Image: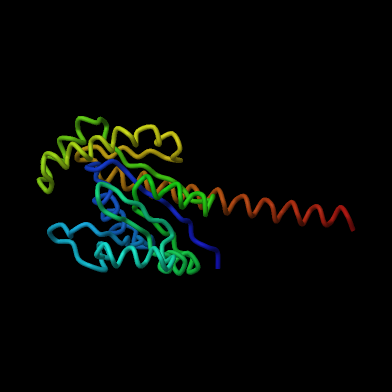
Length: 209
């Protein structure tokens, strides 16, 4: 059985990457979305062990000590991390695993797994991000400004991503299809390359007989 592809997805706060991932999995349940651990408080409707593994700061730091994360980072006063076990298990089963993580964690994963595909989700403009954060109504104005400052620092990192997905208002379905097409194209490229290599090897063996 061939291994699955590891895909790291990150994006600016308010760009809708969580909504995109939910819509993607509803339409294409063959993907496995890794569940991250975090020390932030649950938002309305979020469920422990489904949306996140919600941990106290002490619990999270104990997991760090025990080397239980593929990556972890501190972002806007909270820890976020990807537990190793689930990711490894799904990849071995041939599942394509999506890690929805912050920019800091993406490059740690890339260092360990160079074949990881990096996808960044953004809105068409920075002003639209601020508007979405305000409309979401889950954070104070001070916290929104803190997130905007973080976004300003993250912009330059976009050059290091393999794909940039623009999640426009009222075009979620289109964004889902673009994401799925990216992964299908990678599989096709990989499979075709292996087929060609096998063909060339067979031909080379005939020459040396």
